Length: 227
Ligand SMILES: *Cc1c(COP(=O)(O)O)cnc(C)c1O
Image (cartoon, rainbow, N blue to C red; front, side):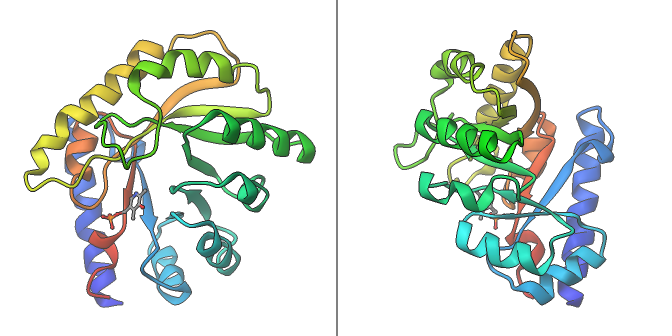
């Protein structure tokens, strides 16, 4: 666990530097520790180190790990099938991967059934890679407008994934574009839409993402490698 502790310290220092560089406070940035490569003992240790937000990209693993640490905030960061909606609504703190209309409807329906609001981020495919989920930047305005009618949904911002790049600096324009999209759309009219979060940046590029306006970063291997 010594390695995790050292990694975590390094990541937190990097987050601080990037936050100041972008004119913000480190406390404005939420670090989501992505636990897909580790088990509950490591997660418990990380929680003891002061980390309270954890992310999983698969619902099955999320359920299992969430049960081992229910007091933490859990984030679903990967693709959500409509038949798994019941496993996450009312249980997770934030769904980062709302990427299509029928999922939005299903989340809303489940939220209505349980009498809860469902916190989500809209996943936007800025890089345009075909294998990546998400709506396009061009679709975002109309899509958000339609989501306005789903009263048990809450849309708190955008999430994106940059492609894997040899030169991470090439991700910067992608992050910039998502920030600009948020700035453009944040003054719209629906009461269930409040664009306050930008979830962008992973181990390879979280510093660049923060410099470009991210306030949620999803970091796995930079914390847990060598564990
Ligand atoms: C795995 C994963 C991450 C974290 O990736 P690392 O490179 O390990 O930091 C972030 N976001 C999503 C959607 C992931 O699936």
